[in-house]
Amino acid sequence: MADLAAAGSTPVDPAAPHAADSVSQGSAAAASAAPGPAGVGSPRPDTAAPGSVSAGSARAAATPAAPAKPDSAALYRTVRLIRRFEERAVELVHAGHIFGGIHPYTGQEAIAAGTCAALREDDLITSTHRGHGHVLAKGADPARMMAEIAGRSTGLNSGRGGSMHAADFGIGILGANAIVGAAAPIATGAAWAARCAGSDRVVLTYFGDGAVSQGVVLETFNMAALWRAPVVFVCENNGFATTTRTADVVAGSITGRAEAFGIPAERVDGMDPEEVFAATARAVARARREEGPTLLECVTYRYDAHHTWEHAARPRYRTAEEVQLGRVVDPLDVQGARIDPGLRARIDTEIEVLLEEAVRFALESPHPDPATALDHLYADGTTARAGAI
Ligand SMILES: Cc1ncc(C[n+]2csc(CCOP(=O)(O)OP(=O)(O)O)c2C)c(N)n1
Ligand SMILES: [Mg+2]
Image (cartoon, rainbow, N blue to C red; front, top):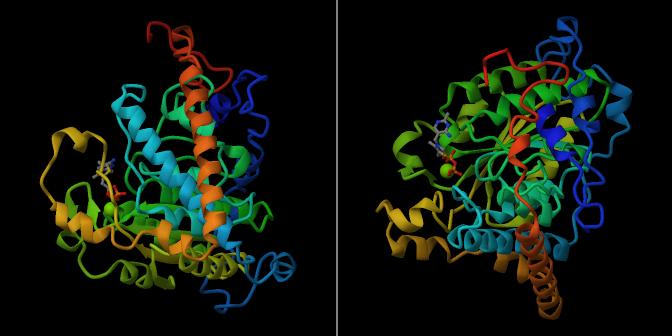
């Protein structure tokens, strides 16, 4: 993580409008300032009545009950930004500017927009292989994100993280993660560390339906519940893990998994940004009141491929008709219908301009110097073992 932050703070062209000025390790440093084992175990749910506030009660009592409802236009703008960012990124993959492909988030935008609208800037997130939307909704600069995916030195992490590992500690993005289920324990550790450091920060973590039978996620539920960690688990149930249908591999229910550990869980319409916001606001308020974790199962549909590799390989796991049906409800239209059509058109134009600039910035930026390939691989002050390289 420190390596990513270091990469993120690598100087970019200061004349460029997207030069990093806010990337710092401040939030992460505070979040990782965990105490030793003595701090672990207090407060526990079995030592404090549900709903009561134990450690840091003054801090929790002073916290507003729930985040303020965001402006409908602002939510629409975030959905539109993510949609068009992904479409432009897919174009860059096909044009050969983004190596290795991406996992498009198209169709799922309401979840990123609605959840992040309920967070403060100093709250933290951890994300997945399908994480562009989360990172953008949390406030990352689209141009530096596009440059990151394109592997350019001006990217959020100097082009070293790429599509599946973008991080921006300065605005609470602890990192996307390519390992299915692996972001949940990181989020829970960060949440516990934040609590121990005396902060009322909340950590929100995303994972897919494919992660819900991973042992590490269930172990994380156990710890998070036991320690009442201020974490919000957001499962993006898009119906598939790669080409496998959720219904074929998930026994019982997703909410039932959390409930087994005493974690309140809610099924949410993941195509409606305002529904997602409302559910997240409740979960965030609970976490900030030190009442512990919540699971939100946001039901959604992935419009595009699991990965852009599919555009060429065309695996047959769902029909065109099914995709067509899945696209009938579109988060863009759900949210777009809530604002004035003229305003909607102006936002659309503004996003086009912004993304044109993001693509230009990314493509005009250099790739990292090969001579720096080993930078950030070792903790400061350590060097590679002789003969290892
Ligand atoms: C531990 C682990 N196992 C397998 C993979 C390969 N893999 C990458 S994405 C994916 C499917 C994930 O599905 P889901 O969690 O539902 O997320 P979605 O892709 O639908 O957003 C798999 C199996 C991985 N990255 N990590
Ligand atoms: Mg899935």
